[in-house]
Amino acid sequence: DEFVEHIAKTTLKENFGFDQFRHEQFSAIKSILRGENALVVFPTGAGKSLCYQIPAVAFEKIDAAKNGRPHLGSGITIVVSPLIALMKDQVDALLRRGIAAACIDSSKTYEQQQLTTAAIREGRLRLLYCAPERLNNEGFVESMKHVPGGIRLVAVDEAHCISEWGHSFRPDYLKVARFIQEIKAERVICLTATATPRVADDVARAFEIDKSNVFRTSPYRPNLRLLAESVSTKQDKFPKLFKFLREHPGSTLVYVTLQKQAEQLADDLKDEGFHVAAFHAGLKTELKAQIQDDFMASRIPIVVATIAFGMGIDKADIRNILHFDLSGTIEEYSQQIGRAGRDGKPGHCMFYICPEDFYLRENFARGDLPSRQSLRRLLEDLFHRDAVHTPEGDVIKLNQTTLGRTYDIRASPLAILLATLELRFGLIRAITPEYSSY
Ligand code: ADP
Ligand code: MG
Image (cartoon, rainbow, N blue to C red; front, side, top):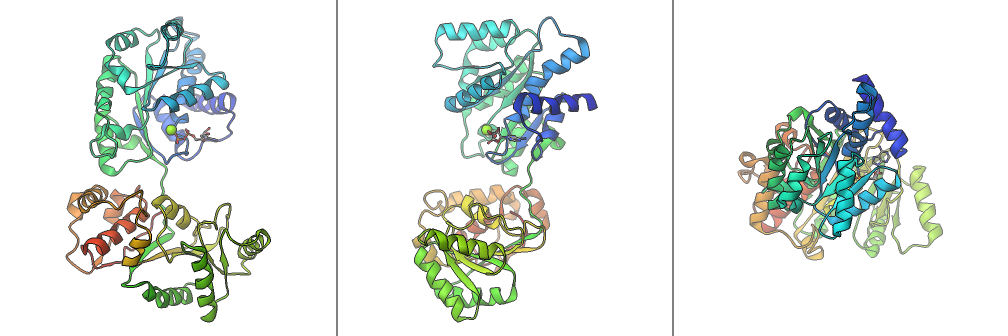
């Protein structure tokens, strides 16, 4: 096994030019090379593709080293992917790296398909990309049963599409598991950026993936404490903010939506005796650089900022991230709170929310506000059904058990959803979710 791991590492270096595996890439690759099925849940851009591309290339090297080169070839890896444009990008990138890859899709001419088929037959192809619709084509399925060296691996990209609980259910995905059995694929790797526990369960069940082979880049940041507090009016936020800042010293970012607000709130804070600067895209370049420097060097402890602040700011000891206004999107919010506590010491993230915020940010959470019913569904999905019926008291406390089951869910959507439920629908009267996550 040490030998197999060594091959995986040299493949990373020699064929992809990278020095190190990221996150859980290596664990996922090892389980695939051991012949097990796996599910990978990493956020977009984390590097899911390598989890099947490395094995696809490594199989041949392992075969060659162990048994000498098999005369039938080392088989291929099939990648099922829902978007033709993405498949093309990937194939081009692989070809640039000298890795034999092709994709079969409806845009290909007969001649092109013949070339691909010939390459497969002669054992020259390492990866074959195809859309799930292709699995309806009997000729295709039949030909995959006779690939010399066999189907070593099937990678199912965007695997959440198989789950009816997911937001992008694709009926064609239901055929993938059948296809894998028919063509006697040796193993399967499923990949997705978005799997709630329920969706992950569905995928794991459909492809017989062991719990121990579910790999996540943990977004869990145990040192961050995420808090949300709802107030009746915008005005009520000020005393809360002042109090919070007095009680929580250290480098602090206070996010607001508008440039003018950044200036005003900074002035208000100065009046209260805080040492603070405002930062937004409307400032002169030199002033912006100055404020950044002062913040980095902890000469200015508090910056009231719009979204313009933060890009490229990597200050390890930011202690507090406060949201005086709602973020534009959940992703934006997650990114912003993710700047707290990078040194591993405690960080506090607080957001204040009031009904007015919803008028300012009608489309704050991925487009329109969700309906009451879809919110409930989403919450059920996040917490599992039994934990959802909450409005029995004033306070929801998310305990560790709930957290344990939903640790992949960033706290931000939870907090925003809870706040939405409360303010739009009166389902909840106060929120103090005292959990840490990211
Ligand atoms: P995902 O499918 O998870 O959204 P990709 O597989 O497309 O992400 O990878 C995103 C980018 O990260 C790609 O440019 C890829 O080359 C790069 N990448 C992935 N793994 C590594 C690594 N171990 N070292 C350096 N770059 C990597
Ligand atoms: Mg991808």
